[in-house]
Length: 531
Ligand SMILES: [Zn+2]
Image (cartoon, rainbow, N blue to C red; front, side, top):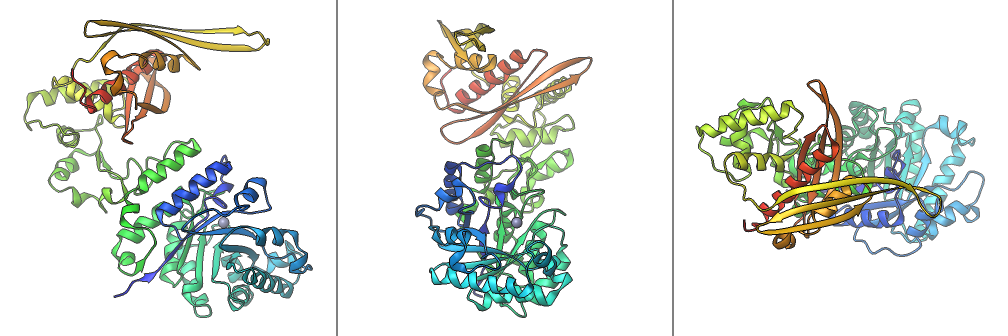
């Protein structure tokens, strides 16, 4: 059975750029466009030329992409001709393969917001589509507030869509602009629309205001639509747009869709999806959603002891898809609720063979519980867990020892009369019989300590050159009667592997030091550095 082609349209760089707190630079936009291209997205909507300088410069030159680069903009203004509308001229001058016009399709908005007649709005759609086609562009029409418009006046909403289609628009996109439409309504209305406009010319653009943007996208596909618009990680104003990072694996891995549809995303690209999702968060400087479907760190995690023992026997019976398909992994949480079977499963995952009735397991479990009671969080810090387990079971080489360190913070007035803080750290490390003393300045005490610690590790220096700290999180906890600080440090190395370590102390420098030490020792162990 030949599968039908379903098209993916990404608007991370246009609608996603409306997210509160997100400001893409031109470089960000180019980076994300390349990521989308590698993923196999069919259309990349990169912005609104003429609306701001960044989008205008993005479209000022030809960007080499496999995907169809799409410029977004308005149809001609009411009462003007297409040749006398600067906004439309900027849009048509953009170096893009496709143009996506947005037009009103709710009669109420046409009269009240646009202050024009229904007929003039239809003429504007026809003229704009015709002008873009004459320029050789593929044309899409985003029908704004289509579902609300359809409920109010189905004939008029449909007339807007049909005006674009009849004029040669490749796609008519039905937008749930305020995100309030429910899946059964989307399914019913798209079914009706597809009686007039063939489904392989119909797209869906859903917002997530009732947390059903993904469900609404699938409802539209079931009803006949063949283009899905969305964003990476569901970026978008208010509650976001339909999340392509959730939609793509469902299309690829759930038989109902996978057997019927073909998309531009290959199996190989799918296996990098988790990495891509996290790379976007890194670029936006925000923490990844641990609970994101498919790609979140907890998406294939389990905590309960009874499941863990069964999972070891048959992991597939507990996951709805294989985590490797999307570049994620199964995770068994080691926590204060965990039993022996969790512990065994996690040890097995990190490549550690222990007998099921090894008496040291009981000690390890006790140790984990005690430490979690004072604030350690091993389910978030897998590398520290592995080190703890290996230490108790006697298998971490003794690489080096920090004999002492000294950190100071100095605040003073500089020559320009500005108040500045300078942090310095001095670390004395013993490697074998050698003593190394290193000093460093940093933008804060922890940064200075990190730099000094990693400056000279003697014979181990070459093993840690690729080590990089990628995230640093601090939380103040109330453990017992005292407030303590928990520091989580995420590190990465040249192989792209990420790991997290934890430190806990009443003193933030001590907590950071523990987490830094664990990260370095973990890296040495992972690199098979000789003891
Ligand atoms: Zn939108």
